[in-house]
Length: 388
Ligand code: KIV
Ligand code: ZN
Image (tube, rainbow, N blue to C red; front, side):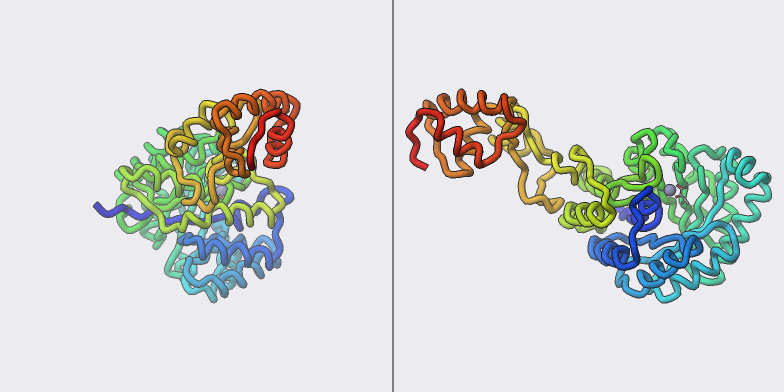
């Protein structure tokens, strides 16, 4: 059975770049945009053109250079925003305007001092106006995670009628539980007239560490687009991490969902974004963290050396990491020491290994991690006679 495609909407350069201290200049954004295009993302959200002349320029230049992906600009439901975004993306091969408004009661009351009816009218007007510039219009219902489902369905129905091609259902505050977010998608799929004309999109924030789980629940219940960022960067605790959703869908083939991402570029793209933004990747970050394929406890090391799959569910080369690593610490066992010693040129017999292992433990108790150069010293200082 052929798999359903989930479109990857990358917002590293918009929601991701909102991270304090991670501002990029146009040149840096162009480097990332080209790489995202090569990675195979379907949509690049290049920025929020009305927000500053610099952002306008970046979006305009990205629109000119991107070859395959759609290029999208964000707007509020404000005419001037839409005009400026339309101007910025006009050279894109496949332009998209992403417009929207807050739909939760809290946004309606406190942000807009308005009513549900008036917000619905503004949403429809914005989509119609955006549609006068481009064919492809995505609508976001900001804070959809906390929006009443019945009202959300009415808004979705109205904006589809006005011409929206994609409906973004953001969990803006990262509040929803996976079951709740999935149920919201299912509700919209079942209750919005005309939903077959539009794609439902997941846009999840990570305030409770649930962004990836929520996005996956969203696609299980009918969404076909995920909005995400490289390394999960973004406002506050960040957005859904691109590398995580891509690999979850790939490692669970029975879901019958896949993306067009070239996963072998994931690690290098993660490094590129981290370096350009000056934002380190946490070592234990799933898929791309420096420890993602590092094994340090004796039991795990023994298993991985015998058969990689005992403790690894992903082949590191599938995400562009050369190999898994066996980290030598005081928690490592003989199998790991023999393996690493062999890698640096020593074939140890069982007796020799016993001897060297005692010396290794003394050394490892003093040092956090044993490197290749330490192995030579340990073998030399243990009294065994080994041909290297
Ligand atoms: O989180 C959010 O609601 C957003 C919208 C502007 C799409 O980023
Ligand atoms: Zn967001």
